[in-house]
Length: 154
Image (cartoon, rainbow, N blue to C red; front, top):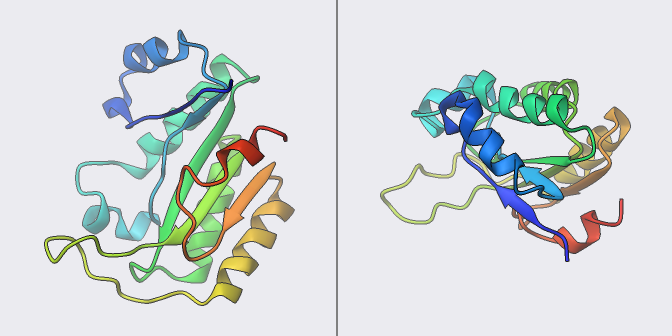
């Protein structure tokens, strides 16, 4: 059996990250969620650079652990911003990316700004693969945990 952990950024606390690493997960997942320009609105308690730092730290500590992140689209991000996030994730040596459509869970949550066309998701999949991601899942209904078993065969 393979073990994937999905973590917060632990406010950058390395001791907390080390505790998770001590469990020797096969995949360490921390979702970046959105582009830097929308972080204050979408993830007001989080920090884009800290999220990237978590993923980079994992690879620094153990190159054998697959790192994974997820991105939700539909908050008003622009295509070049998504490309920038993909590039930043690769610089942090992220191995796996999931890209899906944000769907508003309730009226208390942020509204959807745009529904992204499937062909745009496909263009992001191809872009991510060309950048060196080992596995990419990109489509409107993709979620972070989708097709996890396929990813273990990379």
